Structure formats: structure tokens, C-alpha cells
Length: 427
Ligand SMILES: Cc1ncc(COP(=O)(O)O)c(C=O)c1O
Image (cartoon, rainbow, N blue to C red; front, side, top):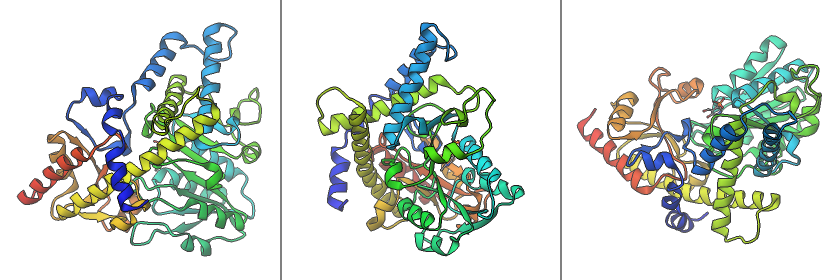
């Protein structure tokens, strides 16, 4: 997208109108939510879906009475809508659960049980620990590891992955987007290289989820995990995997659960009301896409995918404008920005930026902002290896500001004013 169209998106995207759909934003008044990487707010339709579930059919699925049958219907509907959202080939490829980490653990354990001569796993130093340590834990099952390292600009380059791949590689586990630096990974290139070597690809889409369209077919990955709480839904996780691969994995399940997806990767009862909320979050995004494209007619499965994709592309365009402004404001305050900082490369990042102000600890930065009613976060961002690569102490880490599509330019300017005052005072 050109600079002009990015500026256009910044002014045409209906952020203010969308904010009206988020009760938490309305209640909080002028409070600024810039810690969305740790969890985003939810629109009214999500709240309504969760409430409706708890009030009307808060019972176990699989019964022969209406409330229980309604739970089955909710889960089936959510599977269809999340499948459409990620462009899955079939809804059975979608599993629901507690969070992303437990899915990564489930899949990695099953992979660990099937390691043979292909026993190497490639992990990265850009990833959240959830997609690193879960794989490293397979060492006791005979796994060996290769590290795909980011370059000084905070990005992973497929050229650097190539020499790590061999006939011993079983899996490449990498993120779609860094939850710390906001850099986006060219995952299609990763899949092409990995598949050429006979390896599989496990993608962590948790941080990318709210920022752009997920398309498992275009990514050509083998597994992908996401978390509801980052993508305008309640706390829950979902996973997509290629049906044939899921069929082969030896996961834990009770004897009476058929050895097929999704049941074989959904141990126990998950949180039905939050799955209803996730379904409604897809509806919210699809509705946004419908409004922006001016689609007519009744929504169906095909239009759900097209509408949600349209919304995510519009969000991407708007957020590039937010990133440019954030970068400008941070530069003006003399902040050290970690990761992609050039305007010309803004399409390689999302508006999640780690920074430090010279001579002022990240804790002081976040406390001062909190006193000004602006929420950001400090620390290691659950990526201690990444902090070491950035040459910052893991204990203090960095400050991270993370925006989503309901944030505005005006909020960025308030954030910038507090930072420049702090910089002038010197702490
Ligand atoms: C990139 C990334 N991966 C994984 C996780 C862990 O997700 P969950 O809390 O759903 O297990 C997070 C959480 O912030 C994340 O940002």
C-alpha cells in the first residue's frame, strides 16, 4: 500500500464509529487502551453472545433436551465461522480449547511421540516463549534443535532458514508476527522452504490475529494457533491443523472419544460461552467488512469469509497509518525503537512497538503513562531470549505500546505528549 493510500485509510476507516460498539471503551471515558497485545476489548455482540449462552443454555452438550442441543448448535456454528475466518478446508480442522499455549503443548507432545530420524525442530529467537519452550521440552523425547535467528532489524529472513533445513527437519515452529517487535514473518516463504525439505510448519498466529487476514491455504502451513482474547473475543484458544496430519497425531483422548479431529485435540470440556463469544467476534469483523464493502443480501458462509477478509484488510490499512504516526511520535521523543523503524517498511510491521527512553527505566515510563490514564506494558514480553538479543536486561526489559483498530490518532498524540514531558523532565 502506498503512503497516500495509507494516509487515506487513516482518515476513512470508521474507528470512532466502531468504538461505540465497545462498551469497555465507552465506560472508560478518556482512558487509553494501548496494551492490546495483552488482551483486547470486546464489542457488544460478543458480550451478548456470552450472556445469551450463560442465561439460556449453560448446560453440557450432547444431551437430548433443547438447551443442550443449543450448545451443540453453538459449537457447530462457531466451528464453521472460525473455519471461514481462517479459510480452513473443513470445519473439523478447527479445535477449541483454553489458550494457544496448551494447543502448542498438545501438538508438540504428539509430535514428540512420533519423532524418528526426522527429529530436528527449528525454533526462533523472535517468538513468544510459548512457541519455543513447548518445543524445547521435547529434548527428553530425542528432539534436536536449530535456531532460526532474527537479524538486527528484528525480522526473520527465509534466506537464513534455508541452511537450517535438512532431511532431519521435522518441524519449523515460528510466529506470524512478533508480540514484542510487531514484525511480520513471510510465512508462505517459510512453508515453501520447509515443505521442500519434507518438514512441517507450525504457526503461532496469536499476535497477528487482530491485525490482518489469516489464510491457512495461502500460508500453506500445517498447524496454526490463535487466542480469542487478542482478537476481540473472551479468553479461549483455537487451533487449525491439516485434517490428514491431525488424523495421524497420537494425542491424548479418552477411549470413548473417536480418534479423529476435532475431538482428539479437544481434551475435556472447553468454555462454551467463550466459544460463543469467538463466533460473535467473527460476526463483528464480518459485519464491519459488509459495511465497508456495502454488500447486500443475507450473509452466508462464503460471504462471511469474504466480509471478514475485507475487514481485516481495511484494519491492516488503517493500522499502517497508526504505525507511521506512532513511529514519528516515538522518534520525536528520542526513543530507542526496537525492530522495523523505517516508514518505508511499515507494511512489514503491526502497531506493536517496543521502545526505551534513554536514561529512564521502562517501569517509570509505564507508571507515568498509567498516571496519565494510558495503559502500556513493560517487561520481557514473554520473550527473554529476544530481550538478550536486543541487549536489554531481561529483568527490566522494554516498554511496549500495542494498538488495534479501535485506537486513534488523537490517543497517539496524548501518548506522545506525556512521553515528551517525561523526556524533558528526565524521569
Ligand atoms: C505471539 C504469542 N504467542 C503465544 C502467546 C500465548 O498465548 P496464550 O496466552 O493464549 O497461551 C501469546 C500471548 O500473549 C503471544 O503473544
